[in-house]
Amino acid sequence: MRHFDLVIIGTGSGNSIPNDAMAGWQIAILEKGTFGGTCLNVGCIPTKMFVHTADQAAAPANAEKLGVDAHLDAVRWPEIRDRIFGRIDPIAEGGRNWRANENANVTVYEGTAKFIDAHTIDTGTGETITADRIVIAAGSRPTTPDIADLDTTGFHTSDTIMRLDELPESLIIVGSGFIASEFAHVFSSFGVQVTMIARSNLLLRHEDLEIAERFTEVAKTKWDVRLQRKTTRAEKTATGVRLHLEGPDGEETVEASQLLIAVGRQPNSDLLDAGKAVELHEDGRVKVDEFQRTSQPHILALGDISSDYQLKHVANHEAKVVQHNLLNPDEPIRSDHRFVPAAVFSSPQIASVGLTEEQAKARKIRYVTSSQAYASIAYGWAMEDKTGFAKLIADPATGQLLGAHIIGPQASTVIQPLIQAMSFGLDAKSMARGQYWIHPAMPELVENALLNLPLD
Ligand SMILES: Cc1cc2nc3c(=O)[nH]c(=O)nc-3n(C[C@H](O)[C@H](O)[C@H](O)COP(=O)(O)OP(=O)(O)OC[C@H]3O[C@@H](n4cnc5c(N)ncnc54)[C@H](O)[C@@H]3O)c2cc1C
Ligand SMILES: NC(=O)c1ccc[n+]([C@@H]2O[C@H](COP(=O)([O-])OP(=O)(O)OC[C@H]3O[C@@H](n4cnc5c(N)ncnc54)[C@H](O)[C@@H]3O)[C@@H](O)[C@H]2O)c1
Image 1 (tube, helix red, strand yellow):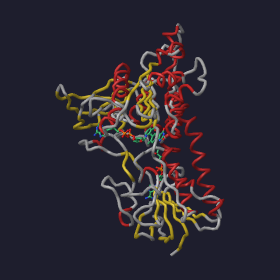
Image 2 (cartoon, rainbow, N blue to C red):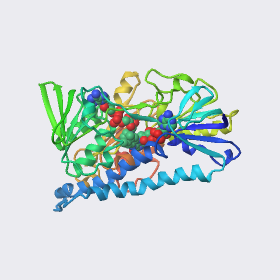
Image 3 (cartoon, rainbow, N blue to C red):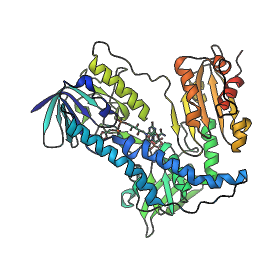
């Protein structure tokens, strides 16, 4: 049985761990799917390439209010799809070949790995290996909801919807979170009739309430949004799929050519029999401490399989911590999860960091808030934006920001100085007054929101 100094399970953020300082280690990398993991192949990168394309396709419709009559002539789906994957697929293949053929100290096993015990792993390739140290970086996968006959419909998840042969006429999306909101924007901008099915009375209900309410309001003007619906049954039809729903007005059905299920992602710990080696949370995530150590000191974990956050920048941060702690076991560093930002690349965009107002209330924290509409800053006038705003939450005693939430154009970029201020402890007043703000640029939204905070 071959023995390794280090085994890494999963080639998403886990693949960034081996570096020159580990050149003397024998390392095994285990991957059951495509090299590069979720973000590269079926996550952040292709979705944002689709979102950018969708933003272009949606531009003519938004130009009318500016006095520009433009028209979207056509969307060449196969070309859009093939541009995106024509770029991504070779990167995945190149990454695989580099590790498999050009890293002298790395052995790649392509199979579904399973723990036999805390030091022994069945690689799923017919070979069982042992290791001194192990990194679990096996990610998560789409959850399938309990809907009768769903499996007869040929439904899609985010893993498959981006590679459709042709653009559907209509699409039902079950779910109301990140993935549902981003794909609703993508497909509706390409001319597809989108129906969104949500269980609760709001889309993106984990956002600050005012942000989720505004997003839901705008979404209803673009998509057929069905709130407070339970999907009881699914069936395949001659032209696509039909869902049976129960809602506030009783039973109803919806039909479309394609169905996308986007109701969350579950950790891959079950595929790995991770419970045979380490302790798990009830939801299946691997338990880790602030040093990314599992219940077994020689096993570390990172990313979606163990994190409170299913975000690539978090998985990457945790991978850096794991890399350091493998190389410096006597001087380990902690992961920093104080101010984890996130953005929803829909239309409008949303970005957030820190506490929502509801969380501040629930924690009985003293806070003040301010709000600033894009419509009241010069660049907002230029864009004729009527729905976007920034909301800040701050500690009235210290002026430190507790949370920042933006809905509107370029929210994911506009929020960055607020993330920086929170991370480095810059108070709101100093931030607003201690620097120039380029006029008349979009960050004036942030400047004015800061100045609006009722602080002494
Ligand atoms: C549609 C979509 C869009 C997203 N957009 C964003 C975004 O814009 N920004 C953002 O921050 N995050 C985004 N995310 C989330 C982000 O992709 C994940 O948080 C991140 O990729 C997690 O990285 P990871 O390394 O933990 O896992 P992964 O990248 O999933 O890597 C895990 C790897 O382990 C492999 N594996 C699993 N089990 C086994 C096994 N038993 N044996 C061997 N190999 C195994 C898998 O095949 C996979 O390749 C998005 C996710 C999705 C689905
Ligand atoms: N831009 C980004 O950073 C980005 C983009 C996509 C995905 N992601 C990550 O991937 C994760 C998974 O995305 P997601 O959209 O699948 O999950 P999500 O957690 O964002 O949203 C899932 C939604 O589905 C709802 N839901 C659950 N069961 C349901 C059911 N049976 N019927 C109807 N609705 C149901 C939930 O209430 C929730 O609102 C996200 O949490 C996020 O961390 C990030």
